[in-house]
Amino acid sequence: MNSVAPKLYADDVSLVMVVLDTNPFFWTTSSLPFSKFLSHVLSFLNSIMLLNQFNQVVVIATGYNSCDYIYDSSLATDHGSENGKMPALCSNLLQKLEEFVIRDQQLRKDGSGEGLPSSLVSGSLSMALCYIQKVFRSGPLHPQPRILCLQGSPDGPEQYVAIMNAIFSAQRLMVPIDSCYIGSNNSAFLQQASYITGGVYLKPQQLDGLFQYLSTVFATDLHSRRFLQLPKSVGVDFRASCFCHKKTIDMGYVCSVCLSIFCKHHKKCSTCGSVFGQAQADASGSSRKRKISET
Figure 1: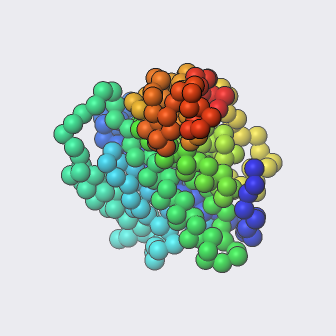
Figure 2: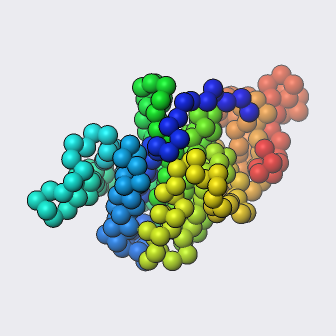
C-alpha cells in the first residue's frame, strides 16, 4: 500500500483522540454504571497528561444521534484544581458532557428499530481524523496521533461504508485506531479498524478493573510500543454489511464495477447503476456471489 510521507514526530509526545460512547440505550442495560465508567476514563486521561507535559488529549462524545468535541487539553487554561475540589479536566469535561447528552436526547427520534440502537461511531472517527489533519498542517513537529475508541454499543450495519472509509483514511495517514470494547459481544467494525491500522483491540474481562486495562495497554506512546508485548487481535471478524438491507452477511453478491455488496441478487446496482446479467456483463458489469471476507 502506498502511504503518505512520514511526518516528523516528537517520539514520546502523544495526541490521543478519545471516542467516548455515551449511548443511553446501552448504558441503561450495561452491568457497569456510566458514572463508574467515567471515573475510570477520567483517571486514565489524567494519567496520560501526567506522563508527559506536552501530551494532548481530545475527547469526542458519541451519542445515538450526534457526536461532538467535549474536551481539548490544548485549549484548557488551568490543569490544576478549581476551589480545591475537583481537577479542571474533570469539571470541564463533565460539564460539556452533560450539555452534549441533553442535546443528543433532544434529537432522539420516536422510531425504534429492532435490538439495541448503535452509536454514531462513523461521525466520531471522521471528526477525529479531521482534527488530526489540522494538527498535521500546523507544522513539521507535532505529537504522534492515535485514536482510542471506548465503545459499548453494538455495531450499526448502516454505518459500514462510512466506518470503512474512515479506517482506510486512518491507515493511509498511519494513525492507529485502538479499541476498548466493553459490550457483551465483540465489535467486528472495531476489530477490523484496529487490525487494518495497526492498533490494539481489547475486550476487558473484568470491567471493575477498567482503569488498569486502560493504563497498561493504551497509555504507552507509539514509540514505546515497539518494546512491549501488547494484546494481539485473534479471530478478527471480517464480515461486511450489505448495501441493500444494512445487515451483516457471510455470503453476498458483489458488483464488479463499484464493489457494492448485496445480500440478494438484483437486476441493477443501486450504487453505480450497472445492469447485472450475463449478456451485459462485459459492457456494464456483473454480480457474483462470493464470500465477503475474501473480497
